[in-house]
Length: 194
Image 1 (cartoon, rainbow, N blue to C red):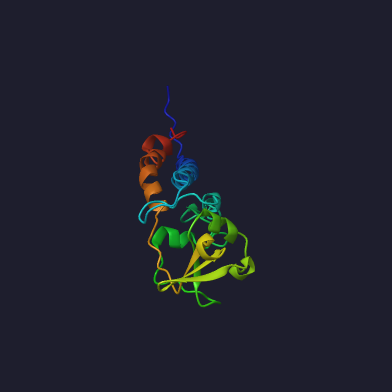
Image 2 (cartoon, rainbow, N blue to C red):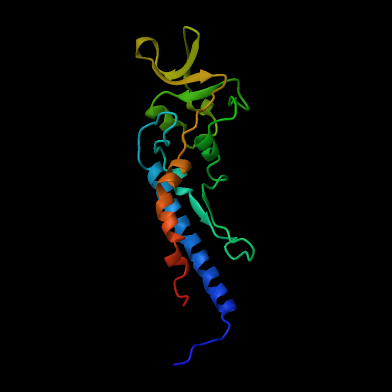
């Protein structure tokens, strides 16, 4: 029996690069699934520091995988995360607001007090179109419906809010890390190379 003494460096390098790219894509899928799982855990409002509760599901649906740099010769790359154009609040949910959030076109921000108020707000360009009544209680301003004892407060009006972080990507990646590490194990990366 004779040994094969041909130089196969280019062939082995190509196969190894292919295996690395496959591991990157599989890892991105693992990360995407775990991020979505974190976002779908709670349907009720969450406390600061825990992943945001599912309200409309738009944040979870926006989690995407970008493979546009997968075939980069020097440094193949895959990105996983929210579509920040579709869901501009995704960054604030993960990291919190850098400072106070203030209204851009009005004097006050209407903060919903209950689910009915949240549902009313969806799809509206302006809160003014709801034709709500202004109520004053103590030093706080409220918007609501009704009069006197039958008044129902829907929104509290504030000059600014500072949002605390509700990370959903970082905890998901911490959970997914062991599965991702398996994708880059020696056995997986050397698959098909002899």
